[in-house]
Image (cartoon, helix red, strand yellow):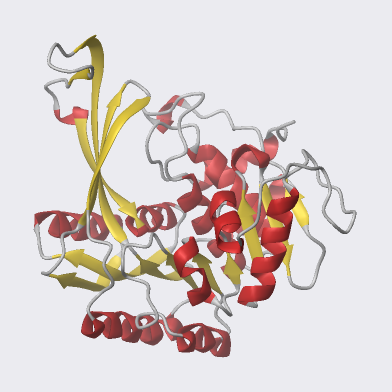
Amino acid sequence: MTPERARELLDSFRDKRVLLVGDLMMDEWVMGTVKRISPEAPIPVVAMPLHKEARAYRPGGAGNVAAILLELGARVRAVGIVGDDELGERLLADLERRGADVSGVLQDSSRPTSHKMRILAGRQQLLRVDTESAEPLAEGLAAQVQARTTSGIDHADVVLIADYAKGVLSEVSFPPQVAAAARNAGVPLCADPKPENMDLFRGAWLVSPNEAEALQAAGTGNAQVASDKEGNSYPDGPAAATMRAGRALRERLEAEAVFVTMGDRGIAVFPREAAVSLVPARGSATLSSAAGPGVTAVGDGTGCGDAASAASALALAAGATFREAAELADAAGGVVSRFVGVHSPQPSEILAAFSSPKAD
């Protein structure tokens, strides 16, 4: 894709209406330094500085997807569940402050707001503590999620499902009629699913698991070769198993396309009406100091998949081809990979990747 085409699509992201359905979470980041091992047990002692920047709360899960969509200029209506607790109130307030419509989010007094606390020393995550319930929603709440999703389709340019298998998505909250309603309305439905929920998204426009999720869902192996069973070769020789998994999932789910994200090996694109292709990972763009103190030459993988699914959904809403959507998704994930912790990429950061050489 040329920089000019990338700019055209990124400019078209603005004011696209996204109906976002999924598992909302609150992420907590505790940042400190390690200088010694505890005398009580063989564990590092993390010294947390006495200033407010040492502890940060940010929307996680589908909340992080919402934050990224908003940063890219979209309008977001969220549908999901939070607990009837302080973290739930804080999460909803944060999303509202960023500009999201959270009127479709329900509160459930029977479960806590999903909370992930990460403890870091410098750039290294030492520990993550998850407080959550992954039990399916009560049938009444699940039916409300389904109703709010279905009613929002006619007011959206794209529907994006951010599934983390925390109980929001089920056969009750997301029956086959939802995908059918999106198709009938001409609204692309994109899903970033967990393997155990993969079949919920039969009939979606785009399904975009990562490589491990695709292999698990398809039940394939990991033999590394440079071509698939039909003799097609691929740059960097992705696993034949990944090729088989992508093809199998596209056919099984009757999707228009499946993207399999493969980290620094790029994105494999499996469209219904075209040949399989590989979008190689692009070199990370040089980010300015204005990007903030969290930026680093090499960060971690937190939030890369969220950025990829957000960018691909907006690209399809803007009229991109599947190949173009995958290129923008790869570039967005590449920007996030340079940060420690989560980051909402700006359009200018994504665009910069198209002026940089692709990774070898």
